[in-house]
Amino acid sequence: MGALDRVQDIFRIPELRRRILFTLAILVVYRLGGHVPTPGVNSEALVAAFSQQSNTLFGLYDLFVGGSFAKATVFALGIMPYISVSIIFQLLGAVIPYFEKLQKEGEEGRKKITQYTRLGTVALAAAQSLAFARFLESMGAQGVPVVPNPGFGFQLMTMITQTAGTILIMWLGEQITERGIGNGISLIIFIGIVARFPADIINTARALQVGSLSPVVAAILGIIFVLVIASVVAMTQAQRKIPVQYAKRVVGRKMYGGQTTHIPLRVNTAGVIPIIFAQSLIMLPSTLALAFQGNALVQGLANFVAHGTWAYVLIYGLTIIFFTYFYTAIVLNPTDMADNMKKYGGFIPGIRAGRKTSEYIDRILSRITLPGAIFLALIAVLPDILIVRFNVPFYFGGTSVLIVVGVALDTLQQIESHLLMRHYEGLTGVSKMRGRR
Image (cartoon, rainbow, N blue to C red; front, side, top):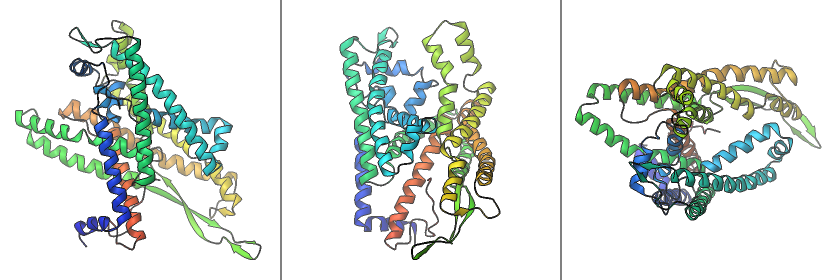
């Protein structure tokens, strides 16, 4: 069966066809909303002013919202307030007993955390939109202000419109998750990144036309890109399986256990979060340099860790490795895993249950996290090496490629599940595709 036949199988299943079309419709709505400008903003002055912000935190933020931040649209904040609050509550679950208890309560606990996350998203979006309004009022290009009529009215209007925009995006993402295909929040970030690809292709064609990028270099870069994407797919899917044996036990008249299973520990457990944390930290000096222009100390620090310098590459890479271990330690708790195994009569062959099992899992996790952390660091610094050393006219690698590949794999895995459930062969024909989680 060819690839075209497998794609046709997707649309032969009414429910799967309906889910995919619904997802596409929601994504179209999201992209249309990304072009609705915030009232009271001079678009031409804004574009000129934002051209100086590409290597700051604002440029990073703009990457996740598909360019809406630089255009100051009603979707300027994107889904990032929701993501930030979700990460905050995940971190709180590791340090505050109340949230740790909620995380262990199953469906009811998850509903409470979701409710808190939504409320936190509204509060954070309101605060960020107010700060964004004041930031726009302070901007200008060649003497032309970005906001012709600043004041309380503009700030209130911006706060209302952008907070409402974030709430709408959050609702759209939840609708995709419930009624569409794939994770809605991830797909919204995914489509925002992919929306930049046409402009990147046009920039590459122009660079080839004017001669700033030679055809030989372009061909070599094409091979590098294919290898990078293949390595990201392999690393995203890579996992270490720890065998687990469950002892037989009798409950009433039934016998339970006796089967053999495994604990899948992913090489890249932390995902893209360490790169986001590291980028926010490494871009902080350049952002502060814009706010404190004329300050020799801040300007010197910004120049020291500027894009393309070896200090930037080294500090950026080491920070990613640190955050990879830090976030992995928060997401996976070997002690809890060992306690749960012991509770249900499970044990790792050759390892004593309890503390020895916890130490064994922790040792394995520490070993497999190191290659994953180094890989994340290499992928993250790749764009800066390509742009500075090879004059590549677009941004490739780092956060964007990890998110695009990860979300694509997750979505394809869900489509694969629908096909196999209805006795179709599946997209790959071998039924071995694994999701990210």
